[in-house]
Amino acid sequence: MYAHDDLLLNVTNLSQGLLYPFPTNSIIANTLLMSKNFQTYADVRIAEDKKEANEMSYKQFPNGTFTDLNRTVFVNSLRDLGVAIPIFLHGWQSMESKFRIRPKLNMIRDPDMVKYQEEDGSHLFPAYVQADFLFVPTKYSDEFAEAARLHLKYSVFLECAMPKIVDMVVQQTSAEVPRLVRLCTWWSGKRGKPDMYTKCLGQGAIGVLHPIKMSWGLGIYDNTVNLIQFPI
Image 1 (cartoon, rainbow, N blue to C red):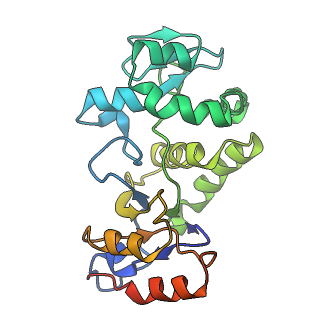
Image 2 (tube, rainbow, N blue to C red):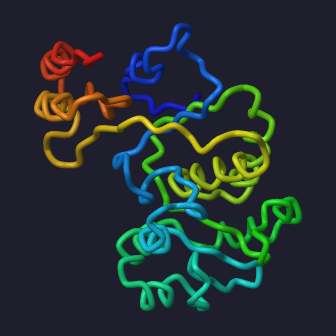
């Protein structure tokens, strides 16, 4: 299980009421948007919303060229892909400008990546995620470790690596697409403060709360912790 150092897990929500709830045989991951292909671990190959899946994922070939998921656009860069699919830039362009495309290209050229290729010889990259939490059953641990080592070898950034690692595991094993639990977080001045948790807990069933900050001072931290009562 991977978890950020300053988050809280709602184990009741993770288990969803099973008799012996946790651990489980399912991969469990967090997401901000439960019904979207964007920032989830959905298999975009079979997504019902083809347009959205195409806007948030792409394929890259070992020769350095790119295509959209639907194979209607063939280009030499993510920026060119964003020209053809404008909303694509909203997600991947900002992520790749910070963390570069080169590590992924180096990785997919590794001989150990051949078995993970798509039928057309490309490598599918799903939407990046906010990778605050992930649970993988031990029966998939060897496959997960193999996929993770390849990403570590080439220093692929965590938020880009996690969905690809999980996709590699799902495609190589009998694992199902991860069951998702809601992540609640905040990026404004409320981040890690009582107002954030009041808003989060008003959203209903939450699986993961992130962050919980001591850096605001022990008084604010104490008030925040006292607020946290997960609904069952």
